Image (cartoon, rainbow, N blue to C red; front, side):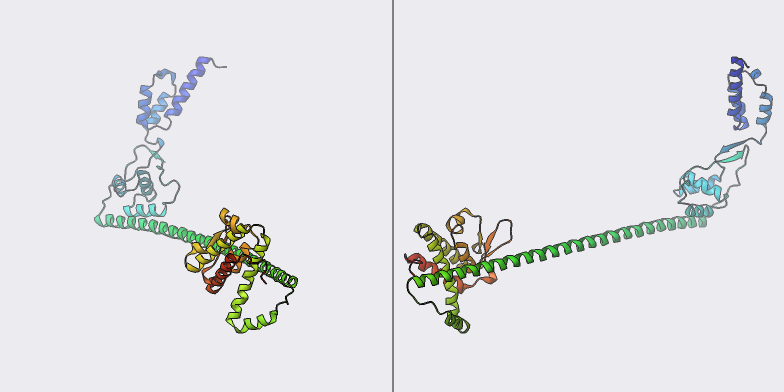
Length: 362
């Protein structure tokens, strides 16, 4: 078993041998001269010197390329590693061959890594290569062509991306339009159902008013009204048609008067408030604020909304309920009927001035 000192010597000698194995002979000799280890400890020293003195020592090094070609490629803007690899791969043939190689291999993953080859010491560089003006011009054309090709590819990719973005935007807008159309149809259907329900409610109220009127006439010993004559005149005369429209308005006010007969002041205030709404709508039909009543308004609720027949009277005049967050009574401009509004004003004026309105009238 070797002693510790011998193992140390062996390890040091093996380290020196492995360290100088791939060095050029001049570097190996310099390394051995500068080593603090004494020569007697290396029985292989004589053979190492002989080996180092030979020109067949090989090492991994950057390949020798034509310096002028390398400088010209670097002057054209190519990195040193890429230019060296191009000259090595093209055999230092020409500047054009090197540029063509760079263009063909520009997507290689190791194109910008400095190449290394096993070379022998003393390798001679190839003869200088003279670069003519024509070759410089050709190299510049190749470089411009490569840049144009790259720009064309980038522009193509950018156009494709913009095309995809526009297509996605169109699809999104179309989906949004379809959703809005479906929502609009749903709201229209809901409004139609609401209008139909309101129509049935008004018909029911009118029927009840007519029944109450007939009952009052019967109690007073009067003959029932002949409704067939009114129907005939309604078809053939605008005057009769106007009277027919006024009658439901009167009945609505009579119902309001009878429902609150114990509070004459409240009834009169309701009639006066309704008259203000009707007159404003008739005088200013083009101004929306006079054709729009907020149902949640405390004043409106106290004077009209909370009384039986108050809202129904406005609906008979053409006001409609809106489908908004705050519900309104709204009179559309195209549904403003001046004849109906004037008739409603006349009925209200009569109800205000007649203290017995709705109590004994037929």
